[in-house]
Length: 582
Ligand SMILES: CC(=O)SCCNC(=O)CCNC(=O)[C@H](O)C(C)(C)COP(=O)(O)OP(=O)(O)OC[C@H]1O[C@@H](n2cnc3c(N)ncnc32)[C@H](O)[C@@H]1OP(=O)(O)O
Ligand SMILES: CC(C)C(=O)C(=O)O
Image 1 (cartoon, rainbow, N blue to C red):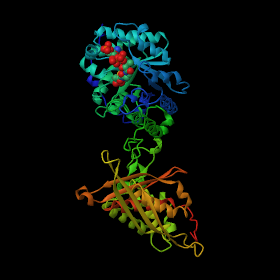
Image 2: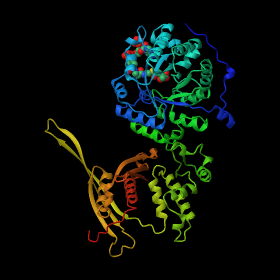
Image 3: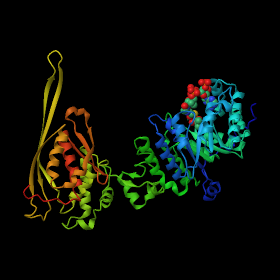
Image 4: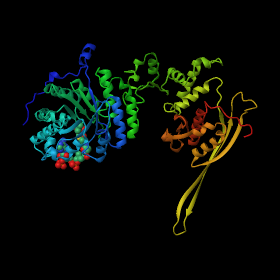
C-alpha cells in the first residue's frame, strides 16, 4: 500500500541564511558526521584499501570525532568481512555495516547479504533500499509492494536484533520528483518498522540545491520525530552545496567521504562540509577537533595513494596561498582582507608565494621567513628596501625568461642570500664539459644478430672551493678538477660534482636528487626551445626537501646550474673541512 503524502509547499522554500546571530544560535544544532570513505569512498576509481589501511583510517576518523564510520559491505567481499572482525575499540564513533535490503522472494533469515550483516556484529546497520518506482520495476524487477516489504522486513529484522538502523533511501530525490507518493511510502515503510534514521540520497548527483531544500523540508515535516540524513554525489559538483542545503532544510546527519572520494565524480566532501557547518552555520560537528581537518585530508591522500589536490577548499596547500602583490600587501595588514577564515581553525596555514605577480611585500615576507632581517644587512650601506626591490626585479625578469619560483623556493632563497653583504658561496663552477659516446653494437652471430646501442657519458667539472673567508693559509681556496661517468649527462655531472664536494662537505653524502622535471617553454622553437629544469633534493638525515630552478636553451646548462644551486643550498649550514694537500 502506498501511504498518503503531503505535496511540497513552495512557501517552505527558503535558502536564505539567518542574518542575525540570535537567529543563528536558535538554529544551532549538532549535525552528526557519518563517514563512508571506507565503503562508498572505495568505490572511487583507483582506490583500493587493504584491511590495515581501513583499520588505520577508521582510527583516524574516530580521533577526528566522526559520529559514525561505515566500514564496508560485509556481504560483498572477504576483505570487508575481515575488517569487521578486526575493527575493535573505537572511542567515539559507532561502527556501521552497510548492505542492501533482503532480496525479493526470500526472507531475512535466508538472505546471504542480511546474514553477513548480522555476522559483522556492529551496533549500527545501514540498509540501502530503493525509493524510485522506476528503479524498482526495471532494476529489482519487483512489484512496488514487494519493495516496500523488502524495506520493512529488513528494518524490522535488525531492530528485533537490537541494532540502530538507518535506511539509505537510494534515488530518493529523483524518485520523489517522479512519484512523490511512492518515494514517501518507502520512508513510511521504514519508519513503521522502527528505523532510526532516514537518509535521503541524491544517488545520481543530478538534483539542484533548491530542489534538495524543498524536498528535504517536505520529509522533515512528514517525519517530525525521525532523524533525517543526507547523502549526495558530486556529478554536477554540487554535492557539498546540496548537503549544506539539506542541513539548512532540517537534516541533522550528513554522509560523505574524506576528500570527496567515491564512484564516478565522487561523494560529498566532508573536508568542505564539516568546516562550513561549524564555522559558517554555527552547528557543532566535531568541536575543536576541526583543527585536525588538514592533517586528516592529507593522511588519507597518502594512505589511498592519491596525489594532493592543492586547490581543495580549506585543506589544500593553496587554500590560503597568496600570490598577487596587492593581495599580499593587504593580507599582511589584515588577514581577513583575502581570507574567509583563519586557516589555523582547520589546521592549515597561510602561505605567501613569489612570482612575477609579486610586489615588494611578497619578497619581504619570504626574507623574514628565511630569517634574513633588514638590521643585519645594511653593513655595506645599501638599504634593505633597495636589495628587496632588486630581487623583485630579478624575479620578474627571470620569470619572463622561463623561470618559475613558485615551486622552487630554494632558488629564491639563494637570490636573497646572495644579495646579503658578505655572502660567500661555498664554491664556484669554473668549467664543465659533457660528452656522450654512442656505439652501435651487434650481439650474436650473423644469422641471429641483435643490434643494440651502448652509450657512455662522461663529464668533467672544474670548481673553485672557496672555503671560509678568514681561512687564510690554513684553508685556502682550492681548485678541484674531477671526471665521472654516468647513465646520462645529469648523472655524470652530478658524479663529478660530488667527487669535488664530498671530501670538503662530508654531510653532502646524505643529500640526494629525488625529482628532476624538464619543461619546454616555447615549443614553437622545437629543439632550440628554452628548457626549464627543476631539481628536487632531499636530505635523508632530516627529511628536508628543497627545489631549485634554472632555465636555458641548453638543457645541460640548465640542469648543471639547477644542480649546483641545490648543492649550494645544502651546504649553507655546514662548515667546510679544509683540504690543504688534497
Ligand atoms: C548506490 C550505491 O552505492 S549502493 C552500493 C553499491 N555498491 C556495490 O555494489 C559494491 C558491493 N557489491 C557487491 O559486492 C555485489 O554487487 C553484491 C555482493 C552486493 C551482490 O552481488 P550479486 O548477488 O552477484 O548480485 P549483482 O551485483 O550482480 O546484482 C545485484 C542484485 O541485487 C539486487 N538489488 C539491488 N539493489 C537492491 C536492494 N536495495 N535490495 C535488494 N536487492 C537489491 C538486484 O536486483 C540484483 O539482483 P538480480 O540479479 O536478481 O536482479
Ligand atoms: C547506497 C547509497 C548510500 C548510495 O551510495 C546512494 O544512493 O547514492
